[in-house]
Length: 490
Ligand code: GLN
Image (cartoon, rainbow, N blue to C red):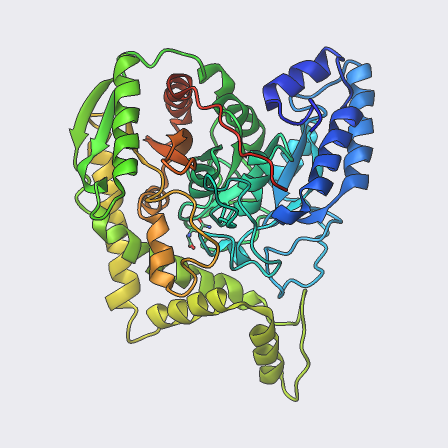
């Protein structure tokens, strides 16, 4: 492909600022790459005309000496973010051809800083899933394949379109969201970097709600520095989101490249689960060695309530989803299927508009919230959640960050886990704890497995301490020297 597509966001911004190429040129190169990559199904909507219009406006601002920090950089947007005048579906049929009359805060900040929108990225329906297979638009195909195989693999989910587009060099970076792992697990499965920030760091206003006490927006990109650059633009207090934290945005990129010497890194023993592939264990040990070599002190820690995290998550997330998704009733926006009575309109619309997984979550959520079961399930899960957060708080009295694998396996085949929802839910085993506790975490590529597929390592930080994660992730990125790319087959 063009030499303007495989570069880092940082290199692109430098090249644009130095006028080595124009925003229009780099945008055109990405539009071509996207057209050539349709077999990946990473986009649900390409917006080339809007992209070129935005790029020309960027070129004018660069010429006028008025460039923003992301000026002219073409990126992709997960279709969970509402974009004004551009169809936003959340990967669901129920939103139909919904065209939002407003822009999400996170995307408006990206445009404020000069970024260019290439289009809307595929995702699991309402961000429920770990493989992108619940999307109403069909699965995304991972650009990576096992050595010697042409079998289609999942890029992970729910931000599968974002991760695949970044890995295949279709965008310089992408927005994503993470309720239980949806930024970090796809980053791990595609050899990319993804950060789930502290709960409240990025505004959720204009992001379609899945489970409001867990949902966080964040970026996926090809390097730690690129993620830090995007984080700087995406973060910040927003009075329109009552959970948005009124705190300053640190200069995230300045944390990348600092020495992690002297930082204390916890290795939680409960993350060594049964049946974990030996390769994941070896990857984890490599990560420990890299940080030790960089001058960190490694400390064994215990997070005793870890094994209750997945069951608690799969009560709390569906409970909140069943409440949030009650608004899709065929009355206000999106799909409407007519019926003889008001109830019939509701029933027919929801039956036709929601996919299987979303229906499963709504049923589970309504059940755990129902009068007879509320205390036994929902309230209990909330208590477990408190314990999990307390475990982290205790650990962070002794360590500055935690290191774990991101996901329990490399990319798996499309269709491999669709018959058994619990097998699919196990993908989130290392990631959901972080959402339950509201902490920041980042996934960084750690190497390839024996079949040539990428594996990620996760660093978990104290609330609002994304800076330390950038320093540590930068050190691991340097040590791993991960430079592999998927061989182009599309
Ligand atoms: N895989 C998890 C789920 O299906 C997490 C999804 C997410 O983070 N949005 O709920």
